[in-house]
Length: 592
Image 1 (cartoon, helix red, strand yellow):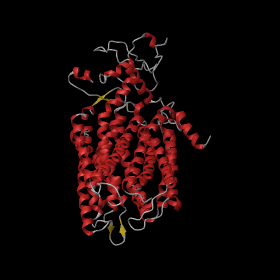
Image 2 (tube, helix red, strand yellow):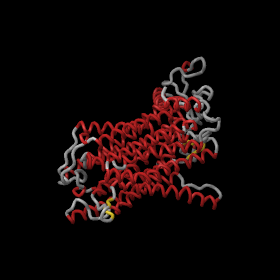
Image 3 (cartoon, helix red, strand yellow):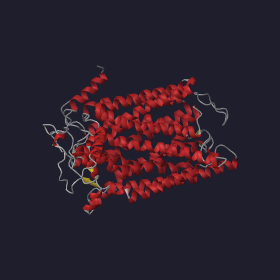
Image 4 (cartoon, helix red, strand yellow):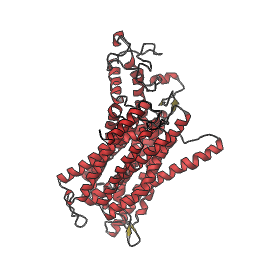
């Protein structure tokens, strides 16, 4: 057995069996002592991955000569795939490997992916030759694209192991059965975002500058080394972690509930659930799982736990067939998932606006005046740093100024509600697209008036839209991540992380779909389509931005008149705070 495997075995075999103790010295495991290693690992991993994500548009444009629709499709599909693999990672983590091993193997896959990307930059035959002028650009051959896509695929696989588990693994380190643990967990979400964002602000300025102005080979070798350092930090803290055993796939349980409920769809539920239901005691059910309280929402699913024939149970009172009779616990877990969907949909619409800055926002920067003085040009991907700066400043103000100040005045914590934060994020997404559209029209008009490829307007004019994009993330993304993680039972935390990144994935796919549809429709009706080609001056990108703003406006109405009702929390035993739609009339609750 290798030293890495020994480390994994040690962390899992000791801390999983007795998660309150450390394997090394008998001291209490978990807490902020373990979090410092997790945040260190996360910071360097994000440094590596985001140095590619932030500059992938520039890399594909300059080294692979991609432009227009193809470039946006590659970036969006890769970004979406990197997020959708989170579902697979969550399944593997919950069923087989546990969060510690899944994080480790995912980091290893990402390391291989970064090595492959470094090779695409370092070996000239793996990418096409440089453009001659602005229009004569050799296109990459199929085998060159295959090598590129192999590297991107490894990175997507790695992301599938890392993204659903890092937040959940950090949350595992706190005892949320106590007030102190719940308060620590709430701060952890913000500090998780803050810590890796600060690391990115310090490092990505240098890494992106090296990639753009010095060497893509060196620029990719740096994040590759950071990934290796990330894995090393993660293993250093292995004896301080609380590592919980995999408890089986929640996805399979959800499928069982749906099948069982459909099988018994003709059964009638009494008003007070007088019929016997399969509700095994904690000793009979999975060990270590917090038992959920029965709720009155989505009552159709309660039929899955309905005992209509005593023969459905064996001699010990256990279900003979899990696809015909499910436990109340399984039913309530499925209800938790359904309960978050209305709010989750609102998050998707916000992320569509955020995504535009990583593609079209960078393309705008490429065709603007990037000079600062006679000898220095701002790398276009640096614009994404201003989104991170805005996010970091807001979190610091909120955690270190706003909350302590309010606490001194009213003698208790007074945080912005989840509804307030998500609504603010939606408003920011609308403003972001409106500002981006106005700026793009001004940029294009100035370039056309001079007959030049690049606009004479300074790239600084893009700052407002990138700052607003960062505020969308600071309000909507952080709030949605906290919402999903805290509103599900502990056994579903990995699923919560996967669902969060699935929303990012769907946003990327929707963005790619809209780009292609708008290109097809406007190409038929106009001589020059709104989108497409290597030159934004021939497009009408501002109209696309206005369409995304209209989607945001519809999302604002949807959230505040419907989805916001699912944000209200009700404290339940243990660390579970389920989403419940509370109504004053019990009859209205029955309708759910």
